[in-house]
Length: 153
Image (cartoon, rainbow, N blue to C red; front, side):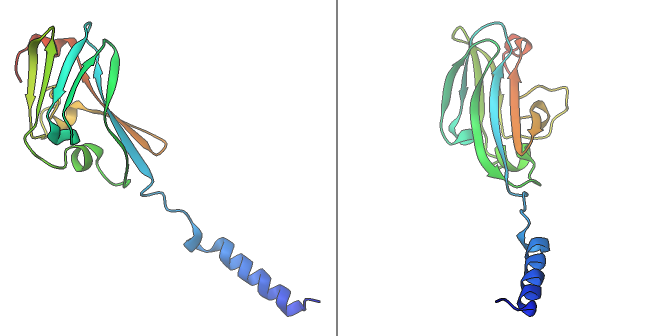
């Protein structure tokens, strides 16, 4: 038979364990991101990205209104700035080229930096759309029809 003191002790321990902040889950590190390159032009384009950005060379075709994954599904801390702290953290010179029917239409050179919001450039922090849904950041750079009318930026 369990004594009255044992019941009180179990009750106190269970209250302590269920109300203790030690057992709360900390979601600060449970965030992730995924980045995409989107083609909003009217034609299929070819995009090449030097290996410094993703760790491997990207050479891909993107159909109109489609997007391709660049990098992501990595865990990050909540307080990280996805663009500055994660995606462009290596601060190395990079090169992104966009071709239309084998003709070079735009060549963006890095490293990434803060540019005016009116300048649409792959290496402009302000040219990326960042959305947070739940604990996942979706980061998108969109190539517009107007990007294909100028040869270099």
